[in-house]
Image (cartoon, rainbow, N blue to C red; front, top):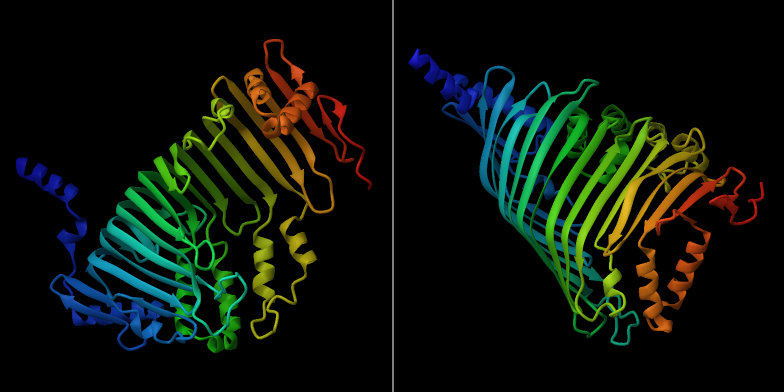
Length: 496
């Protein structure tokens, strides 16, 4: 009994593939090489697979593929990638790596970048899913250096000789000490793959030098944060279609080959739709600092959420964020403004009732890469009708807030909008503590605050008092174009 319990515990904590791994063989290596050549092409030297006991060493060297990119368009290098693969015998593979990835990109007279990071990962790849069932990865010493170039300029700001060397517009250095990810994948209920990921990063830093004109000293901006973390989910990812598109582009490395085989590209794009069904991400960053020439700005917390559909008929998009603990350098704000600086701002915005599948289908069916204008067959009216079959999209502002010391403004709204028609919907704004804001504006020098003070007083005059110092504005937008605030029309009807 003790032996059996110990065996169960061992299997629970060790990869199942290690216990039942299929020994590597030359035949297995040849089959694997063929699979990877499906996606990376058969160019000699790109893919190699070598048996090593119970596992295979997979090596992918992008250099022969990247050498096909014309030098006058870009010079790209990526270090060879090496993975250890173990055949679990059940249609899945153990995949691990421990390597340094480095790359460089140079677009003549426009852009240069160099980067590197160390990657350690383990996971289980499912052949049927075309995705990882599970994967954990750690990236350390992630560093990117970039340079942006612009047309040469003379000292007086006029364009210089075009043959002269381009000038540097900005230099950027980014680093992250450590990033960790954990991924799981399962078969999607409506097709594709459902994936869930958690992620963290620590010790973020960015240093950017922005040119301020010919001969001028660059402006230095430094950004840092101790870290961030979050989760992401994607439902119905069409990984098989996306990988097939990758394979197609690898097999057609030049513009001539792409143009000559655009019907094949059309088929691959159509098969990959809608790319995914739904995607969402939530991220929380803390203690962000921005050092600028005027001083240090700070943000104690930034919570960000994004959601969007794929190319589906029920298109949707949502963005929400909460920013709190804003600090600004002394002297940036006038003394009268500091007490009313917002301490927290939230916004939750969503758009829906639009169709992304129909315009994607139109685009795929009508593009012609051999024409001077590849989209000449597609009219704006066609795109508009496909995108908005009902003529309007729905915009929703979920309950959101602006909070400061002694005051708070809440707002929400719903609206239907479309081209050639007046917005229709409603909004509600509620505020407390505006006396403090008005007093601060009234005490400020007139040349600085006269206009916002006037606008605030006008807004309060149109508000509905609640009897306890609060104000509200019920805004209605009718189909006629008339906008009312608390029942009072704000302007004439829009001509129909």
